[in-house]
Length: 135
Image (tube, rainbow, N blue to C red; front, side, top):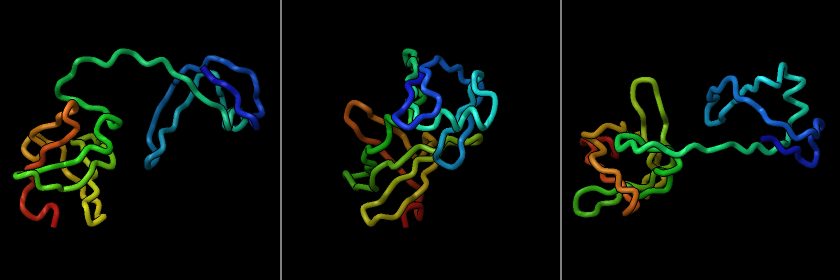
């Protein structure tokens, strides 16, 4: 569902059907069946989109970016590696972007050997990084 914004040229509230999706850096770009060209898309600028959310499957091996962002990453003895900024999904493997207490951003391969536990209830991620990853 689309609701026109204050300055939106096309003010008709309509249902839109997603026909394509791609990422451009950290921006999700969507194409809609009802929007045939760039001019039609520009006329929708400022709109608010509302989407139906289906129930999330019980997948113990997968997480959504919004579930991980802001979680602290800890190691042995409670050592703090930092906080998750984002989850970057890739064709070969996913990466956690962790902001260290010093403000540095470290990309951590999201594999079981390095990220053995994600505990959403306790709101923490356990890391066992290889030597040098956080240096």
